[in-house]
Length: 540
Image (cartoon, rainbow, N blue to C red):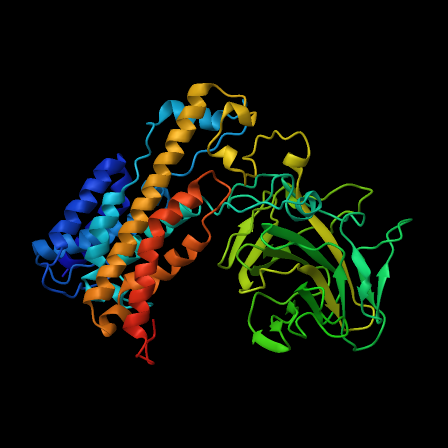
């Protein structure tokens, strides 16, 4: 009676030992391909893939059952980050002559990154043809499907979005408000002491001409302007806009609002156009988009959602991120941070570190000393792309107060050199040249450029294959099969969104992608429209 548990334990031990048994990535890839081929159904059949939590189903070591369990365990182990990172290479950057990271990469790596694109070609059809793997969100969602989706997500992040590279603002004052000298950073690269909040009323303050009568703007010291708003009336909504506006197609902007006093959460943070009414809350008309401290999103006097993010009260620091290229507004909470400093005592870097908010999912990023940024993801989509947008605050309860803070990067505003990875949003970091002022050896520049050109080609190959497979599914499959397809329901929405967000600041990148993808995207859109135009019950 102990035979079956021993068999299962031996399989789990094998899975845990994969890094030791197969230390080379190529060996692991070859093993994965072999197991996929051994478990691949005939071309003409769709079979069920039994999922039993890595367990053999009897005491007899049936070879097919063993191969299936080994594939399950291998995919489970490979989708953990320490293994997953070997399948897709990261873009290479270089900033100055002291950047030893890129120099080491060029010296130790091949000039062409080894992305396992053949794994996509083999694993994708395998997952599609095993019906059990496509039970969306079910407990029987097997590890081959999870591994495939994790692999696709890593490819999208690195090969299409270039680690969430975002555009910088074109206005010097906007850059100082929303992320420092060259704009916002790629996810995960913010080091200790790089991100700071600072009260700077000279550059970022409330506008007395766009302020409700019930709200008083508190002057900052001897200055006539102020970055703090105080509600003087009792239970009356009022809104005040900042003097700073963000123009269309100017990039990604970030700022912070600190709630100096707000015991009940009756405060709105968001953006408005210049035509918004200041006699209501942010989102109280069609010209505003706001988040209230009780977790509701409002626009045009309608509650869009009632469970966004988390409640915030007195002492909370709300981070707002506006993408004027994509037309999105996101929020997050700076948790466990000390109160921001005023302009006289200098900027604040809570616990000497803070991680960049990633989008669009809810995550937490820990700083060196416990400071946490809780990213709540995209709150509003479809913001107008043809008007200026203003940061705005709405107050309701008497004596409630809120203050504006800039979000900046100390490394780039200071000497420009740091031991931590830099914030990058310029294409010259990825395709450096001597004329860009990058003082490095020519062979290092050549190596970085060759590496990133190869990543660009791999991104085109990955996306084109996925779109062509989508076209094949739309052409041949029935509507019910399409609605259960992991490619159509999970991968395609993410892929389509990512294509829209390909960074344009890297030379020729977006143009090259557009020329390659436009015919395929157009054909996919026409097939989807044709396939589902007469089907009102389609859930895709």
